[in-house]
Image 1: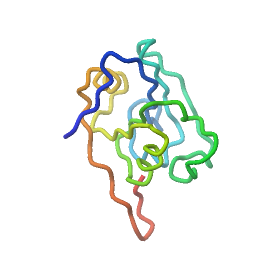
Image 2: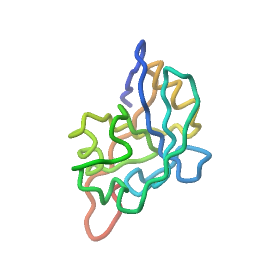
Image 3: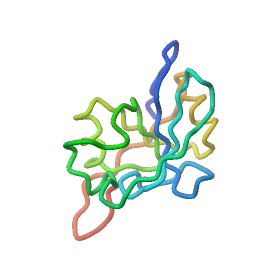
Length: 128
């Protein structure tokens, strides 16, 4: 598993948390994120996306509430969503971690384990 590091630098991070309790899967279909500014410790603020702002349907152009974050972390993420994020300079971080505060700490420490991206799907299967 690869890791990503934010050591010695403050970051603005988006955590996919549809259930508002833990890191959840399907980043592209997630409508609820917690935004964490690591310079302020773990003080997440809630962000609710409109249906047309979900990463799986958003065109990748124009304004979006997640613009400005440096990383999006989720329990799973598809290649299509990761490509949209990369085009905007945002790190895509699918991980096996689920606990929100621990996920942020591991990222800052450079120890967040990353999972493989889901390949593009066909026949209506999810790859978000």
